[in-house]
Structures are given as structure tokens and as C-alpha cells.
Image (cartoon, rainbow, N blue to C red; front, side, top):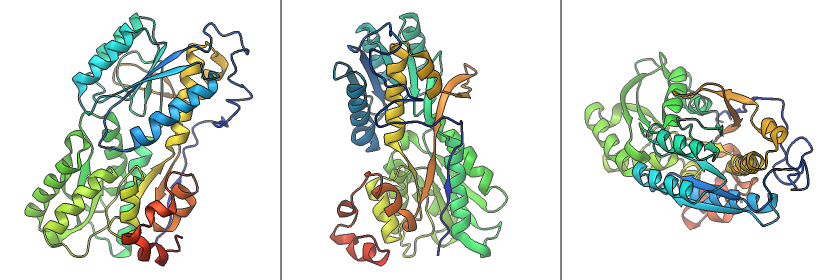
Length: 369
């Protein structure tokens, strides 16, 4: 049986209540702590792309709902998605600055390119909280997952999958994320810390815009250079790219797929794990991240300093600023063994959505009903 890897970030002693009562007994009600801003606040939400289904399916609706709860339905979330276009996101951010939103939650397409927009927001007196990706510039706080740990979990899972017969000459391919995403660099660093010296990284790609079709093309190139029978495993930084990797391998005539990693626990990725096409994904609790981001944004606008500080007790550094208040959220390796205990138990996916006709037999084989 494959070993389950479950690693949590113990980043602070803070116990968060994300479903009702706020933090450390704070209620989030406007009557507490004499906030300088009332409940009629506007939260600007800038998300990076739609290729990853999580942003429209989880992040936006969860943040919108939590802001509504925290502001007694008086607060508004103004949402824009950049479709992986950094210039488009810069325009969207400028529009939110012009419209004088009260706070901006920013998930950057290009963490470096958006720094000027963050500076403009600062000059306009609008706090910017980096969400999921650490943007450059004078951001006020950051909330995400421990990204190096994500890569470590992926790398360790590949080593675990290869088992005791692993040899340092075994060839793997690394399909890393977009070079404009600082998270991708951290995932890569974490993975390399586990893989280096234990296997040979025969080919490594930084995949433009995280697009599955780009990963598919990269993998086809790797197969041509290495040979389809000489690749023992593939490190894929997320589930979408894992799908592209699998397409390329199947097109090359690979009938027995090697272990392939992923991230995000997308429905298609979970189904591939059920069927055995994909070895694992990294499950990150988007509800926890999104709800905490909403709480952080509202606390910042309403000058609830104690609540805000409790939500951001960690510190991180960006290339431009040091000691940024942050919250890092836990991650879990998702394999066939723990689908029911993670994404199903947390309401991310229903068994009926996972176990469609194509996957019903595979679901039954692992007791997923």
C-alpha cells in the first residue's frame, strides 16, 4: 500500500475559526472595536487566470460569501480575472484604484510586473493583500500555502512511489509552473530538495502560463530527447499540466504511465488518481485560505488591528520588501488512499462527481462510494 504523506505547516499557535466567530474570540461584527470604517466596504479581488478552475469555482465565491457574512451583507466584492494577461491585470488594478475600493486582494499574474500597481494603490491609501502568490511592492500582508513545503511533498511522493529500487541514474522530467509566478519557483525549490541526488533530472521546463497545452508540448520534447521507456517519473507542478503530460505520453505510445505528481486537487486530477493515471496531487484547503483572506481584508479596512495581527503572525520576504505579515495554510498529499478523508469530507468534490460512469469501477476498487 502506498504511504500517505500528510504535512501541516505549524506556523503559529493561532487557532483560527473560519466559519463563524472570527479570530481569538473576535466576532467580526461592526459594533466591536469601534472600527474606522463600517460594513459598507468594497473589497477588490484580482485573480490571475481561468485555466485553473479553482479561482472561479472556489476562491471568488467563498471570499464573496465570507465578506457578506462579516459585513452583514453590506460589503461588496468587486471581482476581475486577468486570464493570465499581466497587462490586463495592471489595467484591472488601476480601475479598482480609480474606483477607490477599500482594500485589494491580489493574486498576481506576474509578481514583478504588478509592483508598480501595488505602489499606486499604496499612494492612494488602499491596502493590498497578496493572495496565494507573493507580489512585489509595498503589500500589507500575504496569505497562501507554504509553497516550498508543497514542492517537498510532491518530490517526496515521487521518491516514495519509486520505492526501494530507486537509483540515482533513474531519469525524471520536471514540469514546473510559469516563470512569472513566484510560487512556481518555490514549488521547484522544494521538489529539488527532495529529488536532487536521488534521481537524475533529465529534462526540466518552466511552463508558460501554467497551460496544459504547453506542458504537453514540453513533454513531447522530453520524450523525444530521453525516450519514452527511459522516464521513470514526472514531476508536474499542478494537475492541469499533469493532464498535458499524460496526453503527450499516451500519444507517444506509453501504455504503463510512470508516477506523475500534481497540485490543486482538481476534479479531473482526482479522477486520474482514482484510475491510476496520476499518482498524487497536493490538496490545499481553498475554503480555509479564501475565508481567512476575506477576514484579513475586512479586519484591515475596519482597523481591527488585534484581529488582523492574529491572522498574520508569520513573516515572509519578497524581492522588494522584508518582514511582510503573513499566514501560511497547511497542505496534504492526496492519493487514492485519502480521497474520502480530504476532498470529499471537506465538500470540495462529491463522490457522485468523481465516480462518473467512466470511473465507477475504479472507485469501487478503492472503496469510494
